[in-house]
Image (cartoon, rainbow, N blue to C red; front, side, top):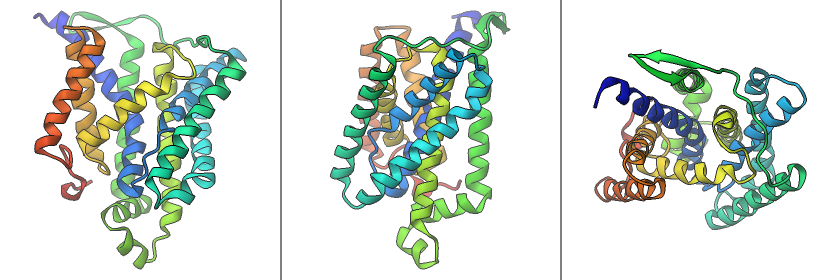
Length: 289
């Protein structure tokens, strides 16, 4: 295999890894901290993509959507957390049923308002770039670089800010955090909003590459949960490891076999990993942020 044929494969893998990390980051923090299984998390990504579509339909630019969509997603996360999830923290089965029902409601609402057909979304960057002699779409390079910048800021926030310290304390020991005077309900709400905002941001980034329909978040939800479980819930580096495992292997296998078979093979390998490392590749109890 030559470098020119290898570059697209590596860059495609990095693109998928970047998007998965953005979607899975909030999901991993929420699951690691609250033990809440949010089946409506993929719909926050859908909301981000639809926000981009609506803004472009009214003449707005992609760059405005890149700012507004995470805010819309965070506000949607605030409503979901306050109205539904906050009352079900200790009832995990009820949380699964409630968020699953909410995901269906959001999907149907979007279909009623916008129709079942794909929404029009335009890429802000056209053309290709030359990378080690190979041509590669410039917009995908932007996704990789922009995602890396956002994720670096998230890591900096977790490691250096008071909010990040509170989150890490709650993940390690919720009872001790409450004994130290940390308002865990407030931290839960902020973390939920952060996760929803990151998912909506991922929706904007992937919008020009995907078919923007009401059900688009379902596929990414399944992958994000798999990333969290395989990588290790509640840790930045666990999410990074899980995203690399899922996104990297799926991209490589897709070049050799049908997509469904590639995804099944990644699932099988993930199960093998969990057999030997039940807490994930990077258990959060053993990681320093």
